[in-house]
Image (cartoon, rainbow, N blue to C red; front, side):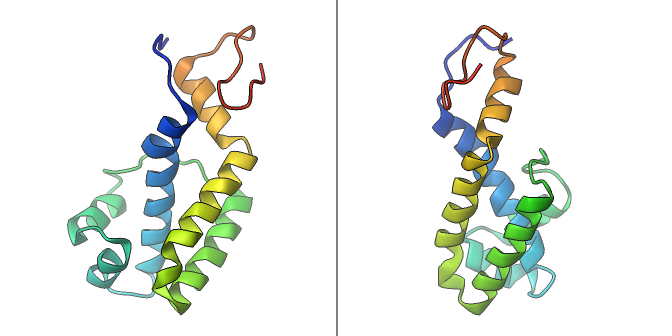
Length: 123
């Protein structure tokens, strides 16, 4: 069990955002060359390759509803790749609303029923 305090923002940076970037990049590679996706995402082609080979962002945190939202985001990014930042923020906010940050936090910290999540304060 983890004893140090982990802030919700750390969960977002370590788990949520990498998962979002991975999902977006993999969906974009269905329509674009890996090199082009890397350029849009602001990463190297090697990073895209690592997403494909499950070497980065290994945790699966997207449910069916989030997969549908991902499709919307990818369509918006394909229309205009300047939408990337807005779509990542939108997906991140949806994940927070769905309680995914809390689920990850509880899993990492192995919270006892008596201890509340530092994000939502729910036990």
